[in-house]
Length: 303
Length: 305
Image 1 (cartoon, helix red, strand yellow):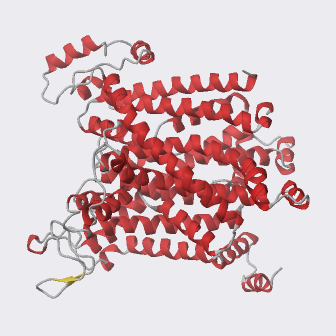
Image 2 (image 1 turned 90 degrees about the vertical axis):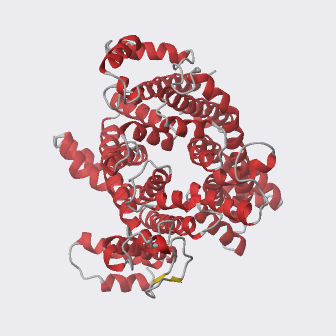
């Protein structure tokens, strides 16, 4: 054990073993520079979303036609600065980006929660019972994967109509496969372990074994998948908004801002540039954090 | 053909059936396909007549069988907007999409495999860091933003390349980069980690100990074994490319299936949507089956699993 690791052990107050494990995990994670960077980025985006009205210098919906398409750093008549400029309706771009993080994170978290729960349940059942149940769900997974995701999403949302709720449901319901496959693989090996065999021998009911013994052990890979999947969902949400099938204006969304900016590309580059940078930085942060989490928790995991 | 491939063929056919069910159900999401297909100002009488003529009053199972019978013959009904068979419209656009996806894939493979190999062989050098950072950025960059930024720089500012349409090679450059970057990033990372794993194996040490030179060790011994996961991901990445073409074609006004289907969704032209989704999903299934055949030649162990 390295001296630093011993130190972190000493620092961790010896409460429950679980708490100590988390402290150790966080210490190890913080030692990876890229993971730490990702964590900080994600933290900043979370704080921006939580305190958007306090941080944003302007009302994201307030239009001011006299101040439209102002370049970054512009000062208006009252001497207030627009650090990232204004859009075609004179709205402050920085404020809209800060508020746009709310939709991105809300859709990301909600959709991941739905697909993660669904995938966990399917993976547990599929891996534990095997046989026909497993065959059924794995073919279902193949069918799901055969569709180009974004095309299926826009087709379904095109029929149902775009709304926050529909977007979350469509992304959530159709993203379960990666969770199910990872959890299933994990369950296949956990099932053969002695503590599970012992529980079966003692006559525990299947449901109890799954929830009490198998699920906690399949949780770690699930968490890694969920983290990385969140980045994917944020990109999909902004792609839907970009196509006009996301949360509808005037609510600020990163993808919607980009679509607006595309029209003014030749005259006002900043309209399309900054919302895209916001997506890039957020997704990069989540990916780096997720990679670190995977390397720390389960380096064998292939996601 | 051996038992493994027969089983995979049957699975693929099963998956195609599943795809047809999902495509069929798109029209039934709101519960009433007649309302979806007719303009909003249709009278109740029109709706009733339309429902009868389209057979929407029949049991759903009967309707599905009718749909399936049409689908296997490539008949998805007529486009509500263009009055032509929906399938013909989609097939007409197919070459453009294949051209774009093919260019994206070719670009990805020709950049990613060398980059991944060099990264692995020269691990922890400047060249490895650069390729890793580029790959990380490539995986985090939304397709539509990348496309817009490329247009901003190379079309609007520099005026070097056209920003829309299909024609000669010039038109293909920006869309192909836009579509291919994510796949490039993914394959670079996969090649790097695959090569690192293989280079640490005993048989590589044996080859080196026998005095085999470094180039043949890397290119013959290591790459052949590291290529197995790359072949798999090419099949899977095809899905990413076909999906990505929806966005890329929209940005660059590329006349392919992706743009057609986005337009069809906005025009509520559902027969075209169904035909496009069905065709793209089937393409994915067929290509992945072919990938599996290649796979069994590369790695004979698969056949005995």
